[in-house]
Image 1 (cartoon, rainbow, N blue to C red):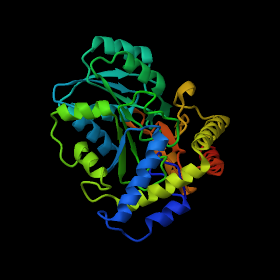
Image 2 (spheres, helix red, strand yellow):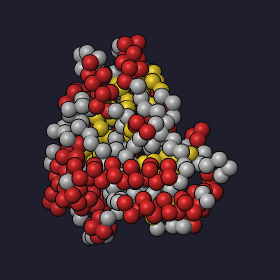
Image 3 (cartoon, rainbow, N blue to C red):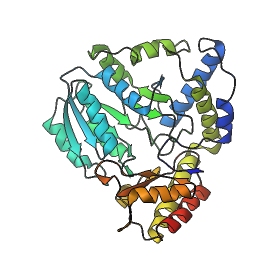
Length: 358
């Protein structure tokens, strides 16, 4: 089976072996060593010296954790959205009482830094800015470095904080959390990290910790202050996803052996092959080519074809892809290519597509 959804992603052999090992005591020395290793590895990938915390939850749980630890009901929040997952981040903030201003780009387009700058001038008291680095519903990657510059230029008295959904970018695309001024970066184990589902990881800046002390949203399981306190002694507040962490340790070792620059270059090559191969089949890219993602390619379903039937036709050939979301359900195919992926996997997708669209 060629699993090419935008997550969960295939597991390398050494990760599968790691997650099949014996269980360990999550309050013992083996776990302390494990937590220390994965913390150091994630810091290296995110290019941060900030605290890195692990929660046993999905990526969406990580987004909620970021919101409830930094928000007080009634706070003004600026949500930069270019698709379904940017919309979800905004919805979470609204659910906890934020007054959300949305800066929206059409699906298939990246966020316009000038529009974000103008919005910050209109909402000078914004406490948080929410940005999706890579939007898997559309196959678009935002220019996070430039968006970070815009936010920093409008920062007064510590606000606004920049919260980044890097669930489908971290580990596959360069991300310099500290240099780009990211206060919280949220990712998840089942994407480019090549580990099983079950872990959200968050890097948290000192500026964000100061805000967390003043924020008044209720929190218990997702209380990052509690997680920080326990992490200092090599533990988590609640029973963690031990095997997912063991898998993540093996995946990080694989990434380190390949080298981060090589990991990013491989994702660029694979994405280029997918886009060019699709074009050669006469398929139209959904995303603006100038901002096309290196972890997921979205393609328009050809005229006269049914999107769901096309997904089923690919599945019959052993290739598992995702359909469109929201208003583009049935009109778009989404092919994931992050983590444990190389050219042969994409060539398999293209061969199946050639048959399915013939």
